[in-house]
Length: 338
Image (cartoon, rainbow, N blue to C red):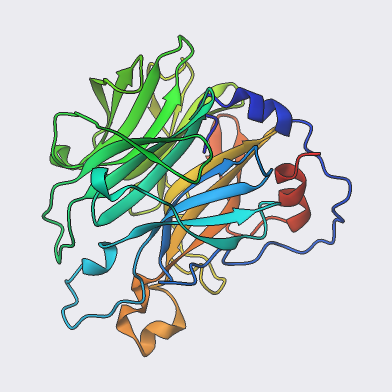
């Protein structure tokens, strides 16, 4: 979610300490969430539904359980729906089906939803691949949809971004009221780029922000700075801006760039989302299962992926995380408004 202009939500969460949650010292489950249909949850986007008070996770429902004779066959990351999970406390998530995405404006393959509320409307920017492919050589576009209830979605426009291979949108509101889109342009060495809009429909391309390969950017405001985290496939790349996104400085190293030791967490962190609750920030991400014991009997087990949660720590302008999962009481206190 990041803040993305949701200042009323952030203000509500500033007083979200929940005295009814006992601090038992237990930690959240690892994994945080596992898709029960195809075991391939990835690319999470988390928002709070004001109608129910629940948190809603939209995610790419990869077909992690699909096997094929050709190890180079990537059809398992195609023909993908957008999965939905819900939680009342941020720590316990239940599967809630798939999002009702109109077929007439999208396609067979849906990736990387970015869901955000501006004003009275929900917006989704969705990566669309027009078909099911066995390799990575296919066009990709970003489609804009809107909703009033997070349940039914209405077709909008396909974004014109000067490339036929764009993926992984993330949209924030700028201080002057404009909107900024961060995305991956695969034709530019998978660079992270930006574009600006005044109406969420027409976009003007801006500069390239990260010219090294990467994807899945998420941008948010926290502790007096703007932050961007993207998936560099060797861990998560961090960038910081002290001038409201006008310029960015790269942090050395990568978050979650070393496999964890817990079962289901023995690989790198990928494609994040960030939820800010009060003064704390929480990093949702997915982890491939290629480091698990099941790989010995099934080399394609690594296609499976799960959602994990860690807390971000800021000190002296740097972000760090530990792969030890946070306390359930801390998560519930932050995610459960009074």
